Image (cartoon, rainbow, N blue to C red; front, side, top):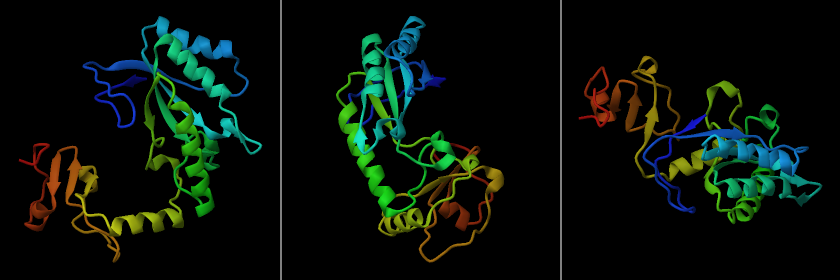
Length: 220
């Protein structure tokens, strides 16, 4: 797995690099010993891999109503020891895709509060480690192949947020999927920019009758 790192993230130490960083994904699971986990990161170090992604499974850390971070502490300590920078992906407990695909949408307001509690606990605890490079907020958001349907609560929250949004709107779309018109509900908002593999579409160009996106990425 190759990571292309361009800049740091707010809330952690700013980092920059001029070349792609080669790393791996490390799965930490119950039953692994401290020696097992140390060995994973020693292997990365010995092979010149300076970055790794780790999935922060809430199901491994919250059991019987109590938080136990000890398993993942071993991973972060090993990463500190061997100088490996971590991309820590948030994985609150979910029954979607047997938990491996990660959380996509809250089922209820109670579930949303559980996710809030998870983020607060996990981020507050692991921020202490030097090896933490950045948090990945969600695994593969919007991935079409997972067949995880958006919930009514997710639509409600999104529509409420969208009604007050005043910034620029943009979308990614393949040229073959562009349509002259799509169904639109009262609360929907059109996008101002559509980026395709051939360039950038602007709403004003579409209204003026342009049939193809502009050829350059900046629309000039």
